Image (cartoon, one colour):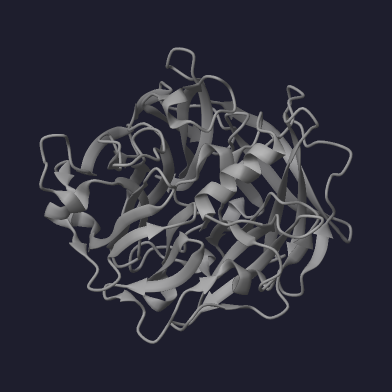
Length: 465
């Protein structure tokens, strides 16, 4: 059985609302776990599983991102739930922000990494809007569970002219008995602020840093702006780190425009040396039609099978792309993707699909991958969508059905990801959120009026409500 945790919002009901649900599959059509999740009076939730520590077991962190009347991002609400019965064990901070030691508010959690063992109960994460790496500590005081923002944090600093750094992902790893956190950040400038026009975004090489897990201090000189522009995820496999980057803005243009700087890259943990592995077509490779898309997501199974999603939008916000499979070791030499990977036997071609949430997540327990393709979630293997199954829509998965216009907001791996082994014989991995590429306006709506954001969502989903 493999499970993901999904969040949804629904602009089509009054008042608009959010939901959290668990969705599982044993290789069959994905189904909602009966009785799971929470209903929220917000349209911008995101949720993560984590190891609660102190023999508590697993918990779910729900993040509710918030904005003031001037559309400026303000402190987020955090709450904790026990997924065995969906009781709330830590109430949301409705009046008091979680604050860093310099009195800056925790704003916008993009991803978390929750180790086991001695670090159980510590959540290492990326605060996208503040450009920081942080630690949340979950514990018990008497009979009550607690959640505290540790004083340690790392501020990522942009190196590009006029750019800001946006923290997107972290990886926990132990090397020679020392615990480290690897963190990556996008850096870009946008003018005017809040614009959804991709031509208003200037992306620079992405940043990677290596930090001590004990105090989040840098242990390698940096930051190093050595990753491809617009990095969106970092994963650990077989002693190496793997980064995926869009390569630039998310274009929507007819004919399709893709970022030729899009890459999957390998990073050596010891010194952060970066090696380009695969890429899309360049301007001279005119016949490589399957390669004329951005890299969107990478899912690495424990046996080394790598699934890759590529794609781009046309001027009507319809998405086209490809689904690929390869052995992770075959991705090498800054090769054209089609030279080292194979298209799935079926369902490999995605053509003119609406939706803005695109991600692949490893489903190791069933030797397949989750495919979040636009607004439908399915289970895929090398032959395409798993035999005898179908994808589920946001209406079905959210249990809203036809009421309003429910939309997936985010998905991340849930249990049993805590026992995921990255290679045969290795120790269990930490719970790691893997999200795929997320548009900046879906990460933070800061500076965007609600009606403008609603128009943005409608354009990508081609829904009228």
